[in-house]
Amino acid sequence: SRSLNSKIGTQIFIPDRFLAGLIPAALIDKYTFWQSDDDNLIGYERSSEKQQIDESMSKQSTRIKITLRKHKGDDKTGFCNSKADALIQRLHLLNNDEEAELSDNSQKTLTLLNILCAPSESLLKKFGMLLSRLDNLSHVLIWSSSTVRDIDDSCSIDRIELPRVNLSFKAKVVQTIGGKVEHRLYSNDHDGLYICTSEEARERAESLLGSIAHFIVLQNADNDIFVLIPGCALPRRLHVDGSHLSVQIILDRRNQEW
Image (tube, rainbow, N blue to C red; front, side):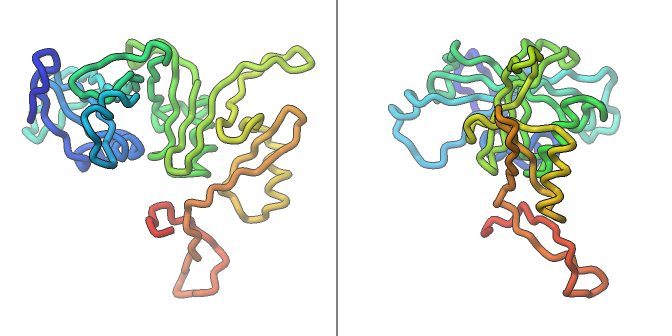
C-alpha cells in the first residue's frame, strides 16, 4: 500500500492477475492499478524505462479511472464474491506526476464501451465483432466522448483503438453529394479511408481473398475499396485427427516471437 498525499489517501496495489478477465488486457498492459479507500481504482501509465523526475513531470500522459457501482446485497460467501458494475474512463493529463492530476482541458474524457454486454443487434456489438477479425476483443478498445455519469447513460462511438496492431479510428459526420448525412469511422493511420460495412464490398473482397477471413474493408470518398489485414498473428495449420495436411488455418495472436 502507499499514501501519495492526503487528497488521494491510502491506495492498495492491485496485481495484474486479479484484473485479468475483468477489464481489457490492453489496459492492463499499459497501466498499473491502485485501489483507493472508496474501492474505486486508478490506473497510472507504466514507465518502460526509468526516467528522470523532471522528464516525468513534463511528459503528457493519460490516466484510467474505474468507478464501481456496487450491487445491492451482502456477500455471504466470505470469498469476496460481491458484484459491481464498472464505469471506466480515460483522462488526458498535462504531466505524468502520480501525485497531481492536471487535466488537459483540450482533450475530452473518454468512456470505455462494453462490447461483450452490448445487445446483439446494436451498432456497438456489430463493430466489435467486425474488429475481432483484426485482434482479440481483449485488445479492442471502443471509446465514447459523450458525457457519461452513470453506467446506463446512452452514448456515441467516437474512437476505436487496437493498440497491439497500432490502429485507431475516429468518428466523423460526413454529408455525401446526395445530401445524406453519414457517421463514419475514419482511420488515423490511412488517410481518407473509413470502415466500410457494406455486405456487397465484403463479398467482393472475399471473392478475391478466398478463405482468408481476418480482414476488414476500408473505403474512400471515390468508393474505392481496400482490404486491411493485420500481420501480428501467426498462422498455424489446424491438425485434426492427427492429419498434418489440413488446409484449415487458425491464428495465434499470443505468439511474442512472431
